[in-house]
Amino acid sequence: MVPQLERSLQLQDEIIQAYQQKAPELRRFAQKIKAGGSVAALQAAEEREAFLLELQKPLVARYGFEESAKGVRDAMVEYADIAENNLVTKRHNHMERLLAGGEDIDLYLGVPAQQAIRNFGTRRPAPPSQFPLVAREDFEKSFEGRRLPVPRKDMLAANTTEELAAACKRGDTLRAEALLGQSGVVNIGFHGLGPAGAKTLAQVISPKLEALELDITGNGIGPEGVKALASKIPKNLKVLKLNLSRNRLTLAGVKAIAASIPKSVEVLSLGFSGMKMGAAGAAALAEAIPPQVKDLSLDLFGNKIGDDGMDLISKALPKSLELLHVVLQQNDLSRRGFFMLDRQIGDPLNQRFLPKLKPENFIKSGEVDVTEFKEEAEPCSSVKMATLAALAAKMST
Image (tube, rainbow, N blue to C red):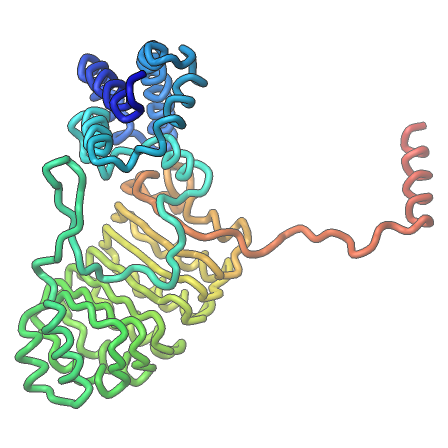
């Protein structure tokens, strides 16, 4: 009997050959999945799954499995324990390239991802603590076609960031200015800056920047530190990404940042996780949304803005919006508030319709927090039941 690994590689090679022969069809499926909205992409993905199943059935039958969907599943189960073998992995990667049909693999969505979009309105789970982080890495294509993380070339290096944090904490403005230079991309999270360190950092941010990405998560800067930071935000920004989670800003700090956002911003990401800003904070953010913003990310995790706060943000979204990502966990939202933004997409009759925002570019995580229907604490009494029975009898006559 042929060893299991050899059988698996032979079967994979035959599947790869079948995929190569059907390359035009696979390319059309991939293009439909990428270009369609969530419903069209799901339909295309399901059609492709059925197409692939028909290709695979006769192939697995040659290896002793039933020529059916069950036989394909059985083959997958039998070879699952060698899936981590390097030779198997290389063939899996080659299959993915064929299925992607020349499209970027990170945009190539299968049935499970499309079902998540359809059922939950989200392409990613809720963050464990905060979002959005100013990432330290970009993604570039590897020789296998996958996208792999590489250090960002425009971000202040990790060792320089450590020196910058130390200079800010001791109030050394000259050293901090020399280290930061003209860089506008800094991840200085969890460095214990405190209010004084935040003030020093604010002083050395170049006013000439057009893009500022600053992650200052978990530094305990408080209202005093964030007000100093707000006062030094460059006035002509096109890109502003601020992660201010875990800094005890209070409502005053949220309002200070909101008031400092330039109207020129086209890409805006704000990390306000756990601020408990309430509807008043949501009102300040709504008023601050730039009129021509195209890409908007709001982490509102744990802010208890309620349906009223969500309504204010919904009204403030400009027609220019092309991408929207919101984190809505723990905001005391009923179904009305939780699905308010969804109704603005794809419905030209909605008075708040966002014409440039396509369903596949709307990313939301969260859940309905408020139960709108309450069950009676106790079952109906026998007197109530008798009354209801008599009323029903009367209506039937």
